[in-house]
Length: 262
Image 1 (tube, rainbow, N blue to C red):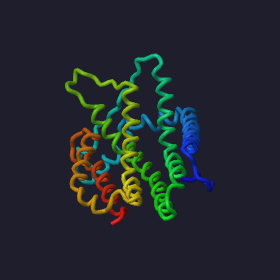
Image 2: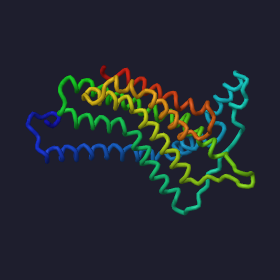
Image 3: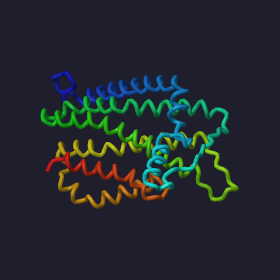
Image 4: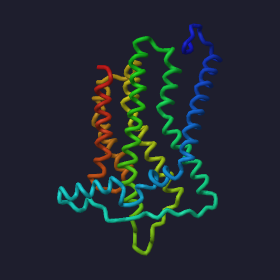
C-alpha cells in the first residue's frame, strides 16, 4: 500500500504512522465540533434536545393534523410535558460535557468516513477507488438521514410512550437527566449507523465479498429482523409507530440490493 500522495512502498510502521495521523485529524475535528456544541448550550439543550419532551414538538402536531384528516383522534397525543430532574450535584456539568462529545462525534462522522477513505484508497485499484469513493460520500448523507429519522420520529415516539406510561396513577414519572440524555444520544446514533447498510453493502460488493443474489436470498429474514428491530426501538406497541421505523429499514435493504453487483 502506498500512502496518499506518495509513490514509495509503505512498511508496517509507515501504515501505523498514517493511521496515527488519521486518528489525530479526526480527534481534532471532533474537538472542534464539541467546542461549538458546548458553547451553544442554550440552543442545543433548549431548542433541540429537550424539544421532544412536550406535546408542542413538530411530530406530535403533525400526527394531530393527520388524525384530524383521517378522522382518527387516537393519532393525536394528549397534551403532556415530561419533567426532567437532576439529583446529582455535578451531573448537569458532566452531562453538558458528555453530550457535547457525542454530538461532536455525530457532526464529525462524514469527515471520519473521508479519513477512512483516504487511508484505504492506496490499497485499491483505480476502478475500485471510484465506486468506493462514491459509497463513502453517500454514506455521510445516509448517516444524517438516519440521525434525522431518529430525532424527529424514533426518539419522540419512544419518549412519549415510556415517559408517560404508568403502572398506576399513584406513581408519578420524573425522568432523570442522565436517563433522558443517554436515550436521546443512543437512539439517534443507532439510527445513523443503521442507515449505513447500503454503503457497507456497496463497499463489500465492490470488494467481491457479497453479491445481489446473496441479499435477495435472505430478503425475508431481513424483513423479519427489521420488524423485530423496530419493535425494540419503538416500544409503544402500535402498528403505526412500528411501521414508521420498519419501512425505512426495509427500504434500505431493498436499496442495498440495487446497488450491489449481480
